[in-house]
Image 1 (cartoon, rainbow, N blue to C red):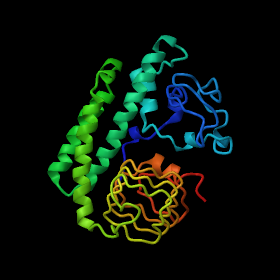
Image 2: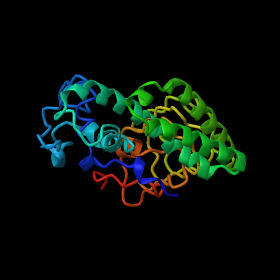
Image 3: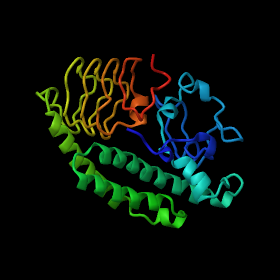
Length: 274
């Protein structure tokens, strides 16, 4: 499975939009409060991060989890023609707003690409392709086009297609291991700290579930729907996620794994995994 390079972040071609447009609150993930539209105090004049190699020990774990799905460089170099908000302060508000929208659009494209490849139904694959084309056209438009998009409507269309493909793929595996456990293995389940190690969970629908700190070591997650699941601190050592559904880089970055954790080919092994 491959993914278009346009959906991978290229920080060197971005005007640090994630470090400026977005805000965050002091927490376990961030050492300080930073309002939206304000540059991070760790931002250098060339848009690089002055503590990039020390983000986790300095209390900025959230920065190492974030992924813009390639929206940063697309907005910086394409939408605004390579002219930064620092060089043209009048573009600041518009650039930051466009970035937030394009990030959502690119994330939809990420999921649709997987859906198109995983479905067994040629008509669903075609539908995913057509929807991707529509979204890509909007994302590649000018600022007015991007900001005029009905993102909520697009989210609904994408969600419906993803759920249809999920049901198809999960059904082919057969949902085993779905016995009741702290409310059951189901969408939106509270499975924080749950012990799910060394189990065959193939075909389980865990979309939107809370898997914070869950023990999934050594488990087979083939065709497990993880769309929007919270994997912060989840233990994935020796787990097999290579055929899991709708896993993103931020989810993996937020979890704990090892060299024997199997990931989908389009994801990278986080540097903090031992």
